[in-house]
Image (cartoon, rainbow, N blue to C red):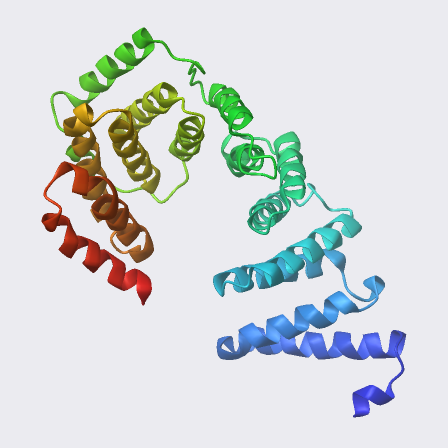
Length: 333
């Protein structure tokens, strides 16, 4: 009631700033109260006159609250905080002067805009990062979502998504033709066999897992787009190159599992005569997914795709029922 007595304007804004500062101090002193205090503080400070709050400080607070929102699945609220943070950063005149902070904020905003279907904005922010960041690793998120905004944006232009991806590969020193010939596949197959040294694909599960996004993440998305455009030869070539790169680096990621799954499906779709090869890729995907069993959603998704998809074509159906049921239970809970 007392708050309502104060007319809108500078006095009310100054009161909100004092309340917000108190909440911020409370959050710093007591972690148990930090979340709600920071949410309210950011909400109040975003509503007051800009000159009352240092812009860069509020930009940092908005990014912090956005990450808290993302952790709770509140995607739209996170997007609002990220955009508020970018506006504050622009107003501060510190954009790209505060290099690491700007990069972090824009990378989160790229993912957020893409997630809510604002592909043009995601693409624009990605271009900003590509033009101003200084290393290949720092450009990775921008590269990845630039491809996705083309391939999965409003126009669903998978062909151009593939072409953009192949151009980005060149930045990483990887040259892959858009229309590979038989000789290209043969050469890649020989190179993969040399790295495997007569070991089965299952040996990928012996490598340590990696949580870091690598170029294999690009391999997976381009192989997927190639499949959508019925360019299975390109998808196969990318898969083999991805596996070979993973073996050479000595680590394996979830994206390798997805590549193995994709090749498992593609070989079955092309011809049942390739069932033995398809089964090898499927078994390798299942074995490598064991490394990521703590990621229950990912692990059980792999189980569902295998035991509810291709495995019933490759082994007795009754052998697939129990694993399929076991995989569905956690996903339904």
